[in-house]
Amino acid sequence: TAALYGVSFSGLYLQQPIQEVYVENTYRMGPEPGCHFSASRTQQILQAILDSYLEGVCYSPDSCSQLCQMLADLVLSKLKDVNPPRYKLVCQVVVGQSGKQGIRMASRSLMNPNTDNYTSAVFHNHSLFAVALVHGLYFE
Image (cartoon, rainbow, N blue to C red; front, side, top):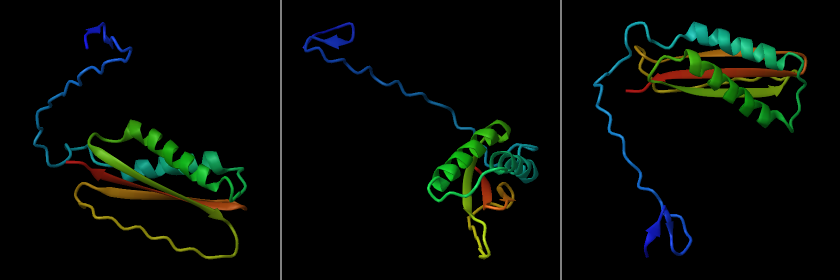
């Protein structure tokens, strides 16, 4: 069929070919000096987010999963501005009901101690507790 201005005679739109962008390799195997993941700065941001968003919140099992997702998305968007280049961030947020129960949390990862790091922050009020954990992993 013949085509006119991106529309075939059958009335269907024709797809434009996707142009691939070729980028030269940087051959960089580690971060530039001074561009490492800062665990202390990240921990301050995490604590500020948890304190400001959970201060007056009461635990609700119905909205807990949405709260965790919203907090994780918020943490990643705030850290995107201060994150060094070529670092990937992994964020995990756990929210639970405060009571007389105990809880143990563990996190494992395979990381390079020269380039990668992690940090966490904890929030606790009369109704709930929250733990936020961020791993900063250098992407070669």
